[in-house]
Length: 326
Length: 264
Image (tube, rainbow over all chains, first blue to last red):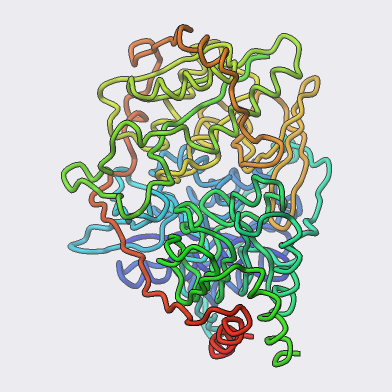
């Protein structure tokens, strides 16, 4: 039997998408191992998140509603989650390995003396032995890991879990934890925060991505991709080659060394498909490749291929789709 | 100011999947020496370390790598980038470490070489992508840690870090000493080392430290995770190549296929 604690992080009005994935993963694990899921939510509106966590499978939802936790601070969050992890008696702490999770996982594991396993997508439970499955070597292989310590911190790879809706009828208990973070724990000071204006839709959240690579041959071609992306309600991405060439900013980079995306449709234009790029689109549902080179590796990942110069295809494609969609 | 940059040698992430094989005996990729490279985020960290040093009077950069003799290649590269010193730390028993154990050993190594005001490392190496070493080192050293850092600016007693956050970026002021894990950005594109510096790097010393030179906790040097099994996955998809020569004709066919997906 495993006692599972999930960090159910709030973002805006509700739980973050990573928190939902972590809770769903935890529930799946609990039903296989005969354990139960508890959650922890931080911040003055933690009770709202706690209720949502219960709907996503938690039977006990811990909260620390201290106003200091309204904004994310790594020290406050590490201290608070660590305290709940200890007090709850849980042996498995699950969190999303999103940006925040990458701050927290290693520190929480080290502080607790727990093992740490990250980018987890699945688990195996056979003969009472639990192992964790995650991609390795840029998604070229899977690794199955056991852990050697009594406790473990598990980071769930973003967008690796099937989304299931919450069950609002589930019942659970909300417990406010007796822990008081203090101002003097904060060591960093925010100077300025800037919202990215370039990609209005975050690549990681985009359902449709039109991505350009070396074959676009300059910044101008990206305007055409932007027109198509706008028409489809999607956003523009780029390969590392296009970013390194300075044609587009580096925050548009898709791949193992950029954004790992999971859109319903990924249109790769003039992208050869280096393996680090392919590692970033593993979870794309439909991949369309437009490339002049029929031998390009992208065609081994694409579901639909067009062997042609993009200049001859993108404009007429946009025109034709516009007639139907607008 | 002492800047330590931690480097990792990895299997080249650009190896074609077709040639990528896992040895079932060792659960490790079958590789030749030519397949090993400096991890790309670590290289961004190295570039940033050199830039910071050049902007800061009296600053020095030490490149640090945990690895066998093979990994001296990445330290030579760091020296060619004009790092001031190179340290390799290794023990024959360290064949199966995980990120936590590496974080412990690197933290102790940094302590043993006189500490550092700024510790840099790549945010997630391209081989196993654990993303643990930076935060673990920070926890071990009692330093703050910022992850997803693209740029740094040294001030009197603190460091201004540009970090990527959900939906944009932020600039935060962090007291030093601190650990920063580095992502790639326009500001830290690795330089091409000068031929002269590459030549000079060949004859520069690399300090070797072994476990008895450090104050290590035996328990923390053990891996917390064990790779039981590794297997290659085949991701090849049967691609439907749309027939046609004329761009207009192809665009029409592609438009039809896209509309069939019913996602717009």
